[in-house]
Amino acid sequence: MKKACIFLAAVLLMSAGTLFAGNLDYLSNQSALYVQTLNRNAATDSADIINFNPAGTAFLPQGLHLDLSNQTLFKFYRHDVEGGLSGPGSTFRPELATLFLPNFYLSYNFETAGTGSFALNLQAGVTAGGGDLDYGDGTAGSVYALNILRGSLAGLGLNIGSVSSRSFKASSIYYGVGLGGAYAFNDAMSVSLGVRAVMPRRSFAMEGVYVNSSGASTAVKAEYEYNALGFTPIVGFDLRPVEKLTIGLRWEYETALEFTYRRKELAVLGANPMLDVGAYGGISQILGASGITDGRKFYSNLPHILGAGIEYEVLPGLALDASANVYFLPYADLGGKEKYFTTGYDIGMGATLRILKPLKLGAGFSFTESGATDAYYNKEVLNASANPPLDSISFGAGATYSFAFGLDLNLGMLYCHYLPAGYITLYPNGIVLKGDNKKDVFEIAVGVSFHL
Image (cartoon, rainbow, N blue to C red; front, side, top):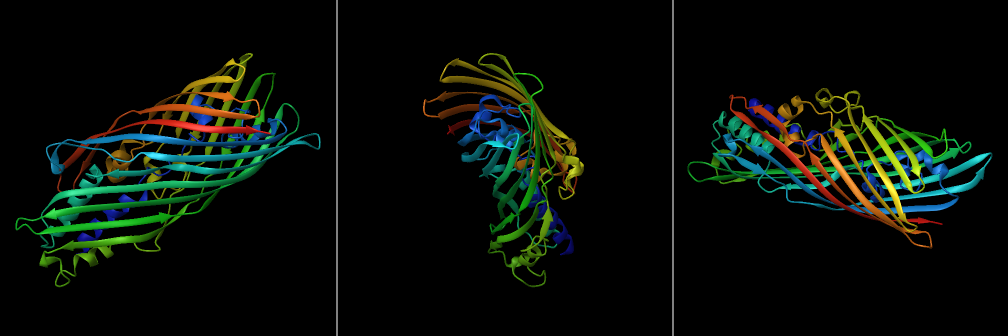
């Protein structure tokens, strides 16, 4: 029984601890205007820069600025398994899109504050995560977990048979609410200070059905949610060394997130008499000894982030942008998983062009290095197979139409192609589970900006 407890503890801890690749689910797409160019770290034209260039809000025109947008994501995730215990070869795909990913920003720029200008900022939205994933046929990770559980119980004489069906669902949404201010000393330099409250809401549900040689079936179900609350101090600087050139800098401190498990379901259903409480102590007791219990706490933080950007107006109506973000993953507390990551980053370029007085077009691209090493894909197969942290190339484009009364309509589209990565995982008995992780995402963003 002790052996089974150890195996099952490893299985469930892997599935719940860093389901969405630790802190690599930080969302850089925080507005419809971002989707247009993928580069906003030095922008100074709308309230959404509270997220990208908070010090730049001190350079907004005097008055009230609002930005509200929603993004719809169509997620084409898939990973392959090359035979083995999953069958002669399988492809696993999730079924859910993310229909609503909203963000709201409000900035009020006061006319003067001493010798400069002062802006007060508020933001609310989804800081990290990505919504829901529903694998109706399970994942490579759930194949691994259910077969380890079968093997460990077989060692105790519990013949539950082979896996006949499986499913895996997960959700990860990090809500964020921030407050801050920015002060411009003159027309050339500003600073900002703010804090963002981060409230992750995460959950997973895994189910497997076994059938033995006598036809008896056994269903194993596990469902947990785990939430946290953390605060992110954010410091920003904005410089305009020469006319038409803006340099934006942003530093986000590590966000300490202590998660707490809440059990929603943990059960075994079946007609096999060997599952009853008796000489083996009962499989339900084995499940309860897994180490995931109501109230258990663990850390999985968001890392320090350095953001930098440059914007230069080459010609009247034509601006070029370049941005970079650095994610200091090896230095964050990821519950022990930080050893599998190097420093991640994304870098890109974009441009906006006003072709008519009310119409502005934008386009851009970015490249992301996730920071995940091969060891992460190989050793954390449950986590990586559900939502693998892959390197990616993104392309965005869109348009803004400005109405006469201070209202802008913002539209954007984004395509993100993730570079495939393979994995090789060994079962305790030496059987190999291997395949490739692949992802593509297409999204549509719609938003409005208001200036009063």
